[in-house]
Length: 184
Image (cartoon, rainbow, N blue to C red; front, side, top):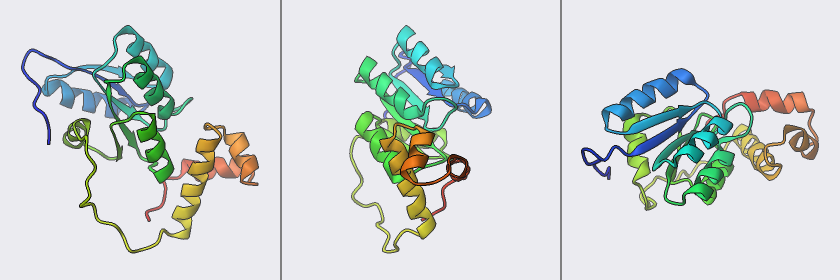
């Protein structure tokens, strides 16, 4: 359940996403809800803002130019273990979801996600055992995507090393990564 924000408290929120329009829309929605919002568009900017003032809440895009949002999740948690972090991704995979949670994210949502979903995720501390479990196996394309994400994670996001381990040309891997993952 969504916890209400008490008037006058103005909790701090850091939004880090390379999509500037999405950031602006999300910032406006959270400002109307009483949050004090700061924006960054890459991991380095996010870390710099967090060093100035550790946010109570953070929304972190997984995939941005430069380092991944997972680096920022780790840095935010090291700076303040109480920061509530929601990771957003248009490139969701099981591997990145697991890593985000292990690194300290409170929740992981696939894009598109709206302010209501994100705010509810900030306060979701328990798992949901009523989530539907599919009886369908993953498609071959989805399995490939998951495997690529797993190896990419093992290589700390290094595309060249991932391509070597997968015995794949680097440009082929980059093309596959640029595509949105297929549905299960």
